[in-house]
Amino acid sequence: MALTHKVQPVLHGSVAEAMHNSVPAGLADREVFCLRLQEIYGAAIACEILGAMSSNQYRCYWLNPLQSSRLRGEDLGGEPVVSLAEVFQVPVDHPITQHPAASDGQIYIQNPSSYFAVATLAPKPEEEVLDLAAAPGGKTLAMAVRMQNTGRIAAVEPIRGRFHRMQANLQRCGVNNVQYYQRDGRSVGRAVPERFDRVLLDAPCSSESRMRWQDQQSFGHWSLRKVRETQRKQKSLLRSAYAALKPGGVMVYCTCSFAPEENELVVNALLRKSDAMLLAIANPPENSSSGLTQWMGKDLDAQLGHSLRITPKGPWDGFYLAHIAKPQ
Image (cartoon, rainbow, N blue to C red; front, side, top):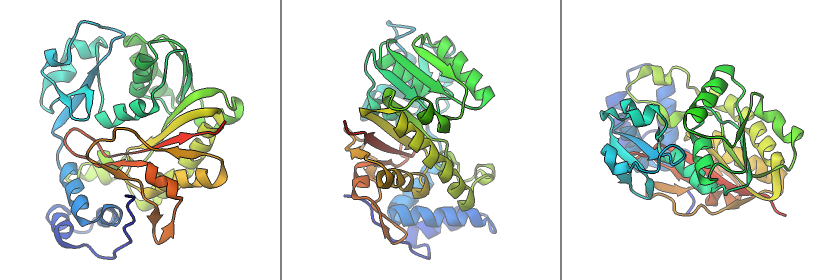
């Protein structure tokens, strides 16, 4: 069932207690953020999210068969993540990032929510795929693995430093089916219309789910105004991604934000102005719920109930995904 919580002007119960216990006086943006969590999820889930934002207990990795076929996930001390057995979790203080398998590309450190986005897109060998905001390259690598290093991935990243780090990451991991483009993704749809079988857009966002509640610097660049500014870029990127998708193709739009302005409202704008359709997302994790079909008293496209909100729990980061199809 889609979430349809209406705005409440005050905090209630456990959410209010969590905020008063955690928020120094005078940090208005944190108060706004906390209120919005309640508006989106209701008091109980909002309180759970605040708790998850107060600690990071796990680090996750998956095996890269492009560099190693002998290593097993359990060999490094990890346990399979529930609902996503290809990904392994270890305690956050585990020295997995210092292991030689990480430095030579045999494993890749990545949150299961990010890996799940690629599993939802499900690229196949020999396809032509677009990764429209590709740095640092983890999702590009996961796509290359699923494609068995065949076909072609166009990896787009506009920022010079991130572009070169992405190239280095993917080359270290044995990827050879990627072509790299340092350009603004908003122009790609016009340049190569209806070119790609599948498109991934992990859109630049406010990264709300990666903020840490006690860390003031986490909120230093967050405000509702900036969320709305980011939305404009996301809408342009999604229009470009959809324009680049072949008829009959599919794409995934995702963010690591809780904000409806960066999630359902972006996809809703595409649904209003195109023939796009939303597909149900298979095998969602237990800590997930349907996308919003109402926000701030306004009804959104009912198809948004097919999109998915992953709430942060255990090793999973908060994430939003929409699986979008272009009709033939």
